[in-house]
Image (cartoon, rainbow, N blue to C red; front, side, top):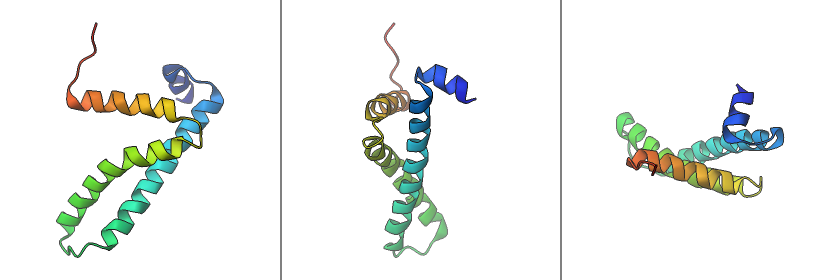
Length: 96
């Protein structure tokens, strides 16, 4: 599995480790920050809280990943990665 990722992303073993670490740290930081923000909410409805949490995660995750990628020297990879993801989500197609 890791070999396929390494080949797909065209990175060496060290960069693969740093990329996976960035994904893990970014996700953990994002969840922690969202939980702290929800602590300030006065909403008591569990369904509404879940929706707000999912919206927070959607907004915070790219920011957390980009910030964490800077000290791990993976910013250029994640900038390209997020641009590709947002391009796919927005429905943009690649030029031939």
